[in-house]
Amino acid sequence: MFVGTYLVSVTSGKRISIPSVFRENLGKELILSQWYEECLVLVARSSLNTLLGRVTGGKGTIIEPVRKTEHFIFASSYEVVPDEQGRIVIPDRLINYAKLGSQVYFLGVGDRVEVWNKEIWEGREREVAKEAASYIEELAKRNGH
Image 1: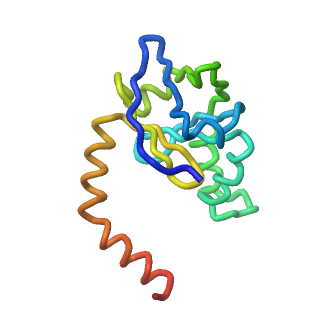
Image 2: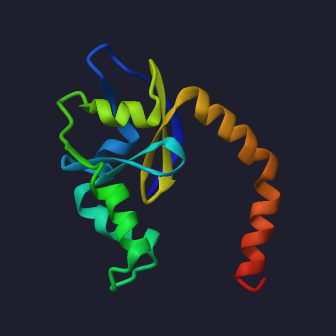
Image 3: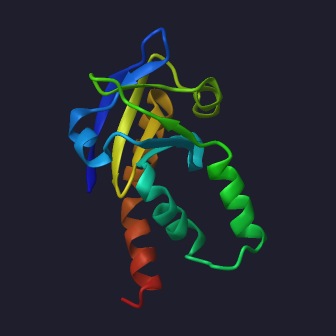
């Protein structure tokens, strides 16, 4: 399980160091992809299909919403291999999509790691903190509690 928030610098060579607390669970074969809300997702290669199943509701039938989700995620995915210091190079396409600058946040979000633009995440975090109680209540209602 991935938890925590870590601020990391991006080098001039578009290289970022994956926080050490995430490296062991991620392994060496990684997938970096665009994700929702203008961030990136980093997962072990072996976990990508499971994550996609969660997003699509595990639908075996390839209906239009599933195809669009697969296009969004798979077509923007890159296999990345960390060097000995746990650094990976972020492709330009993903840097542009997520508007990454000189510093990024790595967020442990249960079964995945998200990579966020520093300013976008700080704004989003403030927004989520204000609305957290209503989100929890809405989820409880949906689950019949």
